[in-house]
Image (tube, rainbow, N blue to C red; front, side, top):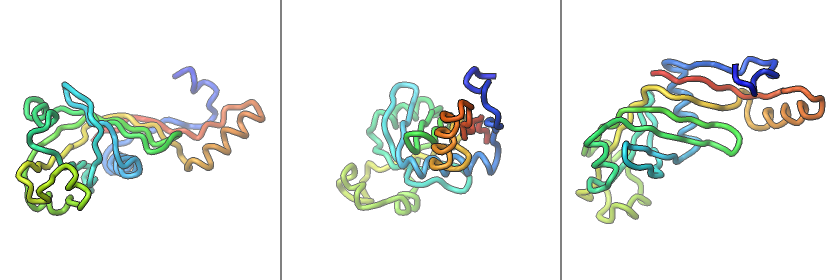
Length: 172
């Protein structure tokens, strides 16, 4: 058992698979709004534009970007998300696929993306990156930040660990 958990009277470990893992990924990634997208050669900030019901994350990217080149050479990626200052931490390893699916580009498109794709949603440089999560790890709280904060405060006052955290592996 981890040393920080020795004084923990509550169950604070739960490994997730299947639909529970998908929901945790969806909740944290959507709340975080952006994260770090890691290829074998670089780490870049990116915002998923969609998390689907299967847990896949969808991004738009330029065909001439370094990370697209990295994915073409090695589709193994890792994504990191932090939903708030105190909870909603997630990383997972996944498999990335690049396509030029016009229907998905249309679905993911928003006007602000014109900053990167100056010709609009028909910009010939646009590609779609789909990341299928495989496995990872999460750290979160069980009852929201307000309850977690209250439990920490009470625990400090009475000298007992009352941590509302929950953590575990994610496998799809």
